[in-house]
Length: 491
Image (cartoon, one colour):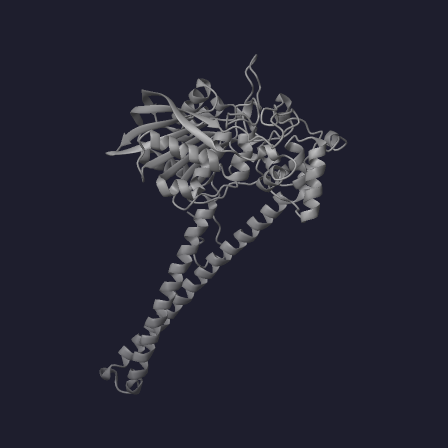
């Protein structure tokens, strides 16, 4: 809650900045600055209401004093002291009213100052000049398409989470980071110039490319087929749910898991979505590199429909409570469920947990809680160029500890993006006493409890084949070239 300076002290009202909990930097939730200011605003409204009520009391007291006025020159026994008391009472009420109005004014001024500061901060982050200054000096002399492949092991050394977010807020840099070839970049830039597009975000760029120079990015329908079911002992903590995401990924390509559990006498379902599985981009696996384009550019429309079908096959009835969990690209799809009207019409999505996912630009419907784990050394969460909003129901945790790739292991997208590191961070989240984290994990526990016996069903998701172009039967079977898009954001 915001700290209120005592009346008369002369000090301004200031919100309390959330403190870091160990190596966890927590933003949002009930301890977040935005929610504190919402409370202050609500308090200011209440104070205004009290001031109006006191104004009415003050007016009534004045009327009583006026009616008693003719008796003020009479002997004391006639009630002169009563007239004086009424007058002093009115003055006391007026003093309290004025003080309440002053406090309300200070609270409102505090909120306005915060809003202005936030707008300036966002404007700075979106500034193309600021973003370009972050580029290492040696890169400025390279060709426009020379930033390298984001899926190369050394790419993570160039940027951290914050640097990536600022870079992807710049339109030309987005095209470079997407890894498209120079011809595609030229076509996209030409199209942008013709349409007057400037400073578009990642979703707009992806849709623009898919609608023009890179039609292979257009999403296609996805089907879901159950492959196996087993009884498991579910660890329903954030770390336990992320461990399930790792197990699903190890089970095979293109699979998700739906866990059916019971808590408080009612069923709940947990959907586990894995990260990016590089391979035949644009092939049957919806979690390949092109799946990132569907998630960031098209709201995961086809993948969301497949998840909805998987839930139905797993026995989820209309209105069933659902928790969605996703790592990396999987977090994009999981979070997109929170704004998918078709999905929300069928199921009651209560909670979303993501790790290492670029989901800052996805805004859930009111009442859906979410917890997002990021690492300062992981550039992937910043790949959509949008910071997550600071609200009561949305908590973002940035892991600040330094991590290294174990000797002899594949560095992947960098040590900060390793799922095992996020699992360790999730355990720290559960042990934290931070009010935002305590409240957020309580919402999760309220849906699925602490775990126990549950039924886990694996589903194979398959993207439908590309349609053949008339007169070119070889097009559908053509392998995707190495120059095709590789958007940042997957595993």
